[in-house]
Amino acid sequence: MASPVPSLAQLWSNKVFDHGDLLENINLPLLVLTSSFAAILLSTIFSKGNKSAVDGCEPAPRMWQWEPFLGLGTVVSQVRALRGDYYLDWLRQLHAGRPKTFALRFFGTRWIYSTEPEILKAVYATNFKDFGVEPIRRNSKITMPFADKGVNTTDGEDWNFSRVLIKPFFERDVYHNTDRIKPFADRFLDLFAKDGETFDVMTLLQRWFLDINTDFIFGESLHSLTDPTRIKFAMNMVTALRGARLRAQSHRFLWAFNWNWWLTAVDEIHEFINGHIRATFAEMDERDRKRSKGMELGPERTDLLWIMAGEMRGDEEGLRSQVCLIIVPTNDTTSVLISNCIWYLARYPDAWAKLRREVLALGKDASLTFDVLRNMTYLNGVINETHRLIPNNVTQVRACLSDSTLPLGGGRTGQAPLRVRKGDIVSVTKTVMYRDPDHWGADAEEFRPERFDGLRGTWGFLPYGGGPRRCPAQMMVQTEACYMLARMAREFTRLEARDPEPYRAVMRIGPSNRNGVKIAVYK
Image 1 (cartoon, rainbow, N blue to C red):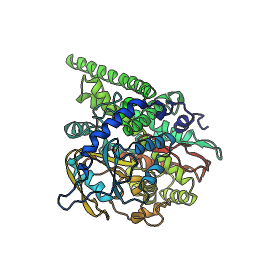
Image 2: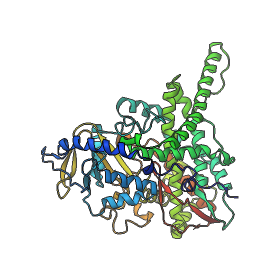
Image 3: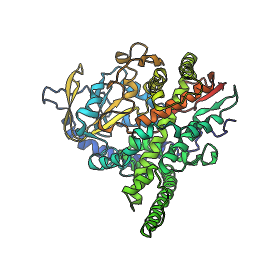
Image 4: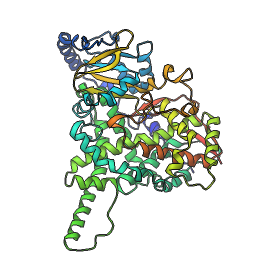
């Protein structure tokens, strides 16, 4: 039977995590006073970021704002869009009718918005050393006290340390092993509703991923599929992610909001992870004791926490920060990607039928190995097309760490080089770029997995990022998504959508559907 547990998106919309309207919690008098003072300061330096008479550079076209110093109108409209779950529409409206690259003020900082693949290439790779994330994540304190240093919040040596710390677990031997997915997939499919009954598959996918992810990281699954009461940890992660998004958009005025609802979730996440870290350190101490006495040790753990703890022995707070910045963001990645794939497949029966034919052509009992899954053209096309229409990373935001030059974006035509200054923010809006008819054709708004047949890699489509900061878990995520969709296609002849509403994105780190993914299946 299908689980009665509601989707996390529903829980949010039903205000299980209600924290009140952020706009109503603002300390308005103090905000206005601070804004006025900042506007006076900024007015003396406002033109500095737009002077670009270097190497033929020209300034980017500037978006008109009724308050041009802090850009508070833009700030307020964005917060409302996030709170009202229409942030993707807000981004599309922001770009509508404007050049592909333009500048605006946001909390007094110059932001360069773009949908140009060449600008994405510059910040990802060509000019990699000139751009980073630490000023807008760690230094702005938006992640504190949830986490401090980690692979998602730092640059330079700290980032390199975090990257090296986790990279061994995303190597070929790990993502090649599809056998580790099978028991979790079996339990997931066992919980599907009977033929024709409506259920929310997004809820089950959230629990499935929580189980497989905790097993991967801690060496011990949470088993939330068999015990739905354990979903509380997943609820806390949803709250943490949504809070992180809101804090990122209001980073200079964090003091103006009430964050108690977020801090409560953070405390409970810390309690859960601290328990695993302390147990791991204690187990290491016990192995050291046995080793010193020449006693038999037994097999050593091979989970990610064990490996990380060996490199950060005794640093509980630092290790917790690293783990938090892996387990919570990844909670969104795979389960939401598969949910979004199913959302589309349920609305495109021909696509489901084509996917099923490709899977059945392998043979009923054929092993779904990494190599088999990688070579399934249509299956991978379904995943890529879903990435394109609902990207997990809606925007790619980087802070300019030193003066730099972007290859284009300047001038009226947008084809002149563009000078960016230290402190500027460059934001490439993937959710608009991935639907640009200039890149994708007149049917860019349509779900058509065939468009990826024979399509080579391009800077215009990077679902897992590019350059040195490319997601190390890319192959693992793609393999898990392929495996789960292939198992479903093998099991069910028909997939039906049971929710007529359009997709309405609830923003955490990435988007998920506010109404969940209500479907019915038939064997």
